[in-house]
Image 1: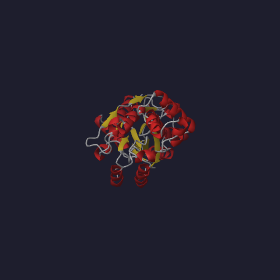
Image 2 (image 1 turned 90 degrees about the vertical axis):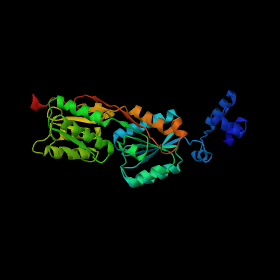
Image 3 (image 1 turned 180 degrees about the vertical axis):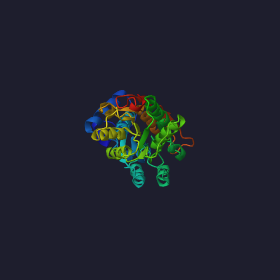
Image 4 (image 1 turned 135 degrees about the vertical axis):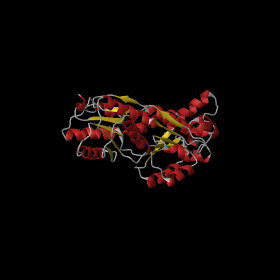
Length: 338
């Protein structure tokens, strides 16, 4: 800042005002900002934090960076943060609770103005206690029903509406042997499984033993689930996958096993990642308004209200957005019903 002041021929305090939005003459503001850009000036987040100014850093902890859905969510988060002049500091928890705890300390050390959690990191007292101690706003995205009880503002999707639409679509096509595949441990996935079970129970469709498979959220996990379901005495004619990654893995496993999709096996996913439309056949899936969810989360984290009221809220908002079913080529009428 001193170098910029010398080059611009103004006081260092004038440079500070010009770069931080404090009123100066338009000519001075333009000159200072032009020289700052020419000199490659960047404010130091630590120095900003020491004098009580926003560091313009948004911390993000992601549950599973290998999942294409979260890669897209991170991109949306970065775009939304940049609109507000923020940069994103990324931490990857790899679904491990101890690592998530250490990450919160690391992000705090970088003086982040707020933190966003992408995906349910597990109901763990140590993690929740650590998050409450960071003294910045923590907002949870796609955590199912757990963050509200933990005292964090949260934004998510109505998992029940999405799964009901998926199962109702399969039932309308005549499917009665409908299985569910998902990771099982996370709050958002548990909500999707509960919606699947509740819908089938409500319409009188039985869920035989073995029709609910809990596997890793990966292509390998999908192959494991496919093998287990096909080995049943009466394998399903349709599968609801809790994520698109699993659904695409199921399609791959079906192709390898010479099981035709959708004529022999219909598959529905959840997320509508870009690869869903490019799959062969195209994946029928539940689309979430990712950009809207992320925008709401960023507003809760670093909006004017958040900046003036750091830390946990007494009555944290819990915003829910509705998804919609996108029908493509991976589902068709059940052969048993024709």
